[in-house]
Amino acid sequence: MTTISLYDATILVFYFMFQISNSYSTITSKPIVFSTYLIHRDSLKPASYNGYVNETDLLARTISRSNSRLSHLKSIMKLPDNHAAETTNIVIQSTTMVASLTYLMEIYIGTPPVKQMVSLDTGCGMSWIQCLPCEHCFKQNQPIFNPNQSSSYQVLRDTSRDCMELRDKHDFTKFNGNCNYAVGYTDNSFSYGVLAKETYIVGRTPIRQIVQGCGHNNVGIYDEQSTGIIGLGNYPLSFIGQTKAYIHGKFSYCLVSDQFGSNPYARSKISFGNDVEGLGVMSTPLLKMEGKSNYYITLRSIIIGDTMIHLRSQFDKLMIDTGIVLSYFPPYLFEKLMDALRQKIDKRPLNVPNELCYELNTNIPTITLHLANGANLVLSKKNTFIIYQNMMCLAMKKR
Image (cartoon, rainbow, N blue to C red; front, side, top):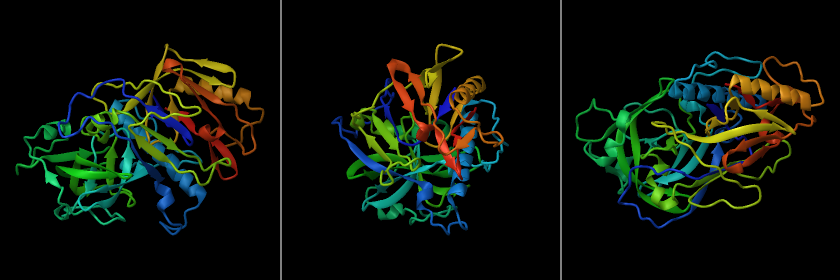
């Protein structure tokens, strides 16, 4: 399994090639289209946050969060974790998982609507926000949601169909008749609370009867910019699973770059329910794995310039994840990729331990991922290298 983050201005179009098993009678089948902007978590932090934070510090934190997120994904996939203690001259290693989520999505919840900044997670099967009253709540910049002030808030009973969909997240330690959930993470962070239905507003579109967690006991390392998590994974209780009759299982996002002369006014965006059209847009089938909420696509080969790198088998699976900025490949494939890059780049790499780094003005060959259905994703320098101080370093690592 390969984990990939198509960093910067790359559009991924997600088409569900399978059916989510459950259905929701409260949702109309009339298709709708809606969108909103994504906000990078570091863009919300002032320079005084946690002391002076410069561009180098932000990059180190970003890479650290990617490694932490990979460790979490490996624990889910039951793969050996070689990144638990990894350090380089660039990476400051962290042990967090929830705090590794990179993008925030602005939504409004309740009646009247209250602004929420939720962390985007394409590998999560349910959504939750912090709610009053708090047994334990982490610090957040937005006011904590008060369900007693929302006329559309409806707690679910423990015998409801939606509650049964919690499966291993169902908290059976409380016997109050309500549907109680318990979500834990690999860094020992957790959220405990009740499952409820609420009204969401995404962009300008209201969506009623969305099942979410209302967390009253939330402990761990959470970003104060965030008020919770919106799960976009392949799971009945995720936002995608619940709105499938609206959006027909389609969503797409574009993460824009701030490097190598990119448009400084461009904004990252996520859209639901529409077919993305335009120059360079392509589609490839999504794959699912039994019991997993993550999304996968099929890799056929990699081309560096005009050099093709063949896989050991006919194909490999790529996991798509919004919590990772770096891309991770199996050791054999990563070594082939590194060798091909060194041969194609006409400059000597800079002396940076455990990294492939070059001067900023170095010409970098395109890296093409050949995917299923004949889709070729062509990645330029701004998609494959990260600027660090006065050099640029490969945004790919060994899994």
